[in-house]
Length: 208
Image 1 (cartoon, rainbow, N blue to C red):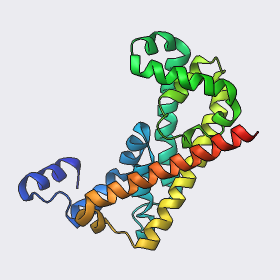
Image 2 (spheres, rainbow, N blue to C red):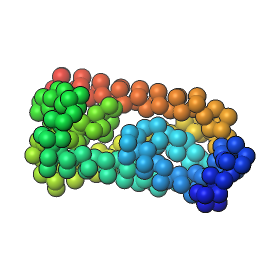
Image 3 (spheres, rainbow, N blue to C red):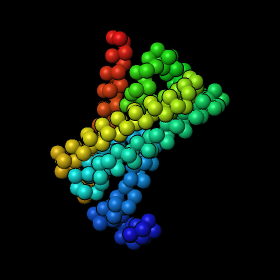
Image 4 (spheres, helix red, strand yellow):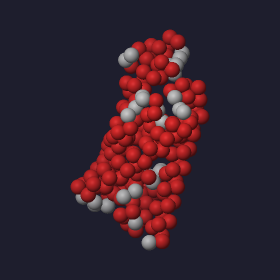
């Protein structure tokens, strides 16, 4: 079933999220959707996909790689913006400018802690690579940190999602019947995970 048939299914039956359509959509577009999801934010998209690994719809290594590639592309776009034209880019966005100003001070104080863990700092996914690019960090060094941190992040969240799917016996029909509640639950979990790791990093930074 291609994309146009899925649209036709939705228009003619009003059941786009039927088990058959849902499963075929996930089989054909799941990894692409995951890459898009992690490009914009991350945790909820990985948790949804990885929770279905135990059903055979996805493969753990491919899930990790897809999640990593989406986040990697996002990081590098904002890093290059920051490196090439960050001052102008930030100056045109007053709300972003305030966040960049605050985080720049934090980055200067805890540079290596941030570089090794920035993917877990929920809520700063745009600001962090932007600030790193503006800091003058060479591309070859950022390549190392972005690959290392991105793979650790994608593997960690995918592992959590996998065991969540096993424990709660999540299936495609789970999303059909309880889509809103499942997405809210995964989003809340992703926020909690990012917030907890963020707090741990800050506490370790203060004590060091």
